[in-house]
Structure formats: C-alpha cells, structure tokens
Image (cartoon, rainbow, N blue to C red):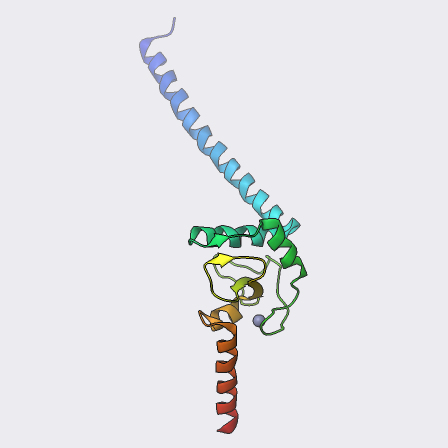
Length: 154
Ligand SMILES: [Zn+2]
C-alpha cells in the first residue's frame, strides 16, 4: 500500500519527468530540423536560395509568376553577376548569422515592377543590388558613367 504522500510525490515526479523529456524532445527535433536545412543547402544551394528568395518576395507583396524550380534552374546557370561580371559565390559555408556575403546572389528585377516573371529578373551580387538600389539598370549605368567621367577628369 502506497502512502498518500508517496503517491503525490510520484505524480509530481511524473509531471516533472514528462516536462523535462519534452524539452529534450523539442531540442532534438530542433537540432534535426536545423541539420536538415543545412543538408538541403549543401545538396542544392540553388534551389534553397530560389525558395527563400521567392518566399521573401511573396511576403513583401510581390506577384510571383515563376516557380522555385524555374528560378533554381536559372540560378544554376548564373555563374557570374549580370551587372559587374564577377563570380557569384553560391557556397553557404561563408555565410554568418544574418550577415550575407557581398558576393552572394540576389534577385534583381530589371524594371523594378511588382511582378516577378522569368523575363524581368536577373541574378546579381548582393553588393551590386545594394548599389543599384531602386534605380533602373539603364539609369544606374548612366550614373556610373557620370561618376567615372567626373573622377577621371579631376
Ligand atoms: Zn556584381
């Protein structure tokens, strides 16, 4: 016969035990999920990038008329930045927490429209996209020219 106190203790212990293990369970699930994401990045960085980019744009209210696979295919072919011609770094090893490497890829909308089609996008460096900002490509190039001309003349 178990005493009332002992029964109470057992009950509390069980509760604590469950909670404790639940935490551990969640922790291991989180670890698994993280590993799965890392593996996905390693296995197919292009598709991983494409999925992230399209999700991000959708969240920001863009109309996305292109599938992840289509963009991933385009990404795979994009060895060089279409603005400066430099090599694009598709590795995810260098990327720290929330600090994208400047030579990593980013999506550039040629006409800065709210719709994303296969015809109006380019893959360029993050740094080039930051520099270009909201200007259209032709205007950006003419600004670059002006800067070069001015700096050469002085
Ligand atoms: Zn570039």
